[in-house]
Length: 276
Image (cartoon, rainbow, N blue to C red):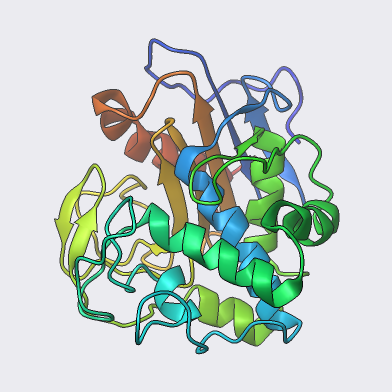
């Protein structure tokens, strides 16, 4: 990690926040406190997705087995194509027809994994993701879609796993960050309709989306998630970096304004060829 005297990355917001950057080897920069625990909101989903993928890796769950509405599979639920509404049990679209971002889909997914593994989702995550990645602050007692809490150091550890997997095979890792059901349009919350609105297995893929919460310098292969608590976790495999942000203010216009430039600052300071 950079020394304590290293300059902070400028961020023009009027609320408290923490942020960090890491490569696959370890943290490169953290400011705002590495251990403070914040609400993750929908950045809970990458942790849940990792738990699901570990179950797939161990042969307890199959990506293409039925789960959710008639005709839906685990893959559909992870990729937000099962047809569920954002919240509630209503099915508002045909399976595989549109990208409909859904908390319900992840809650149904967690129940499916519980039945398949014999563990409560929180216990499954504790034994696989939390222990496997040596997470120290994360709390997984809320909704698997948006209820977890955690710290910058924990998010960066998750990001490192998504840069260089230790819990997943190379093939499954590559599939997880590959577009599932290509070409589907949908709403990216906070940023409007995207066509296509590409997602992998639990992770949003940047591709050519505009507007977007990552930076102008982010590679199209960048993937991750942001949350309504004002949180993000991105992984840029081309740059070999992961970045995370947590803050006191719920997602709003300040985040839309600041996040892309913040990501570009992270890439400029720590990306390939940068003098660290």
